[in-house]
Image (cartoon, one colour):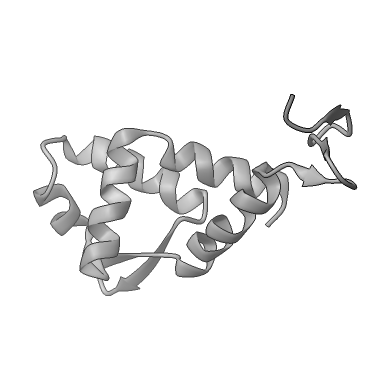
Length: 111
């Protein structure tokens, strides 16, 4: 996952309502758009807006069956997030007591 895709997924999940929607969908395995709407006190257009953001960011997958749309979590993207975040946000060690930040600046270890 490249940096823009990672940022989009994090931005999509950064909204409390979208995070809760993703959690509900993950817990259920798969939900129709109507089933998602039943679980939230939001208008249908607002639900659709949030689901679209999550799907566009790759967090959700959408399966169409006739006139119905079924939504599930894109587990591959969630696994990538779980692997990439610690790797990209943890400082890198360079020799004893030296830590490199993501920008390459070095500083002494614990002072």
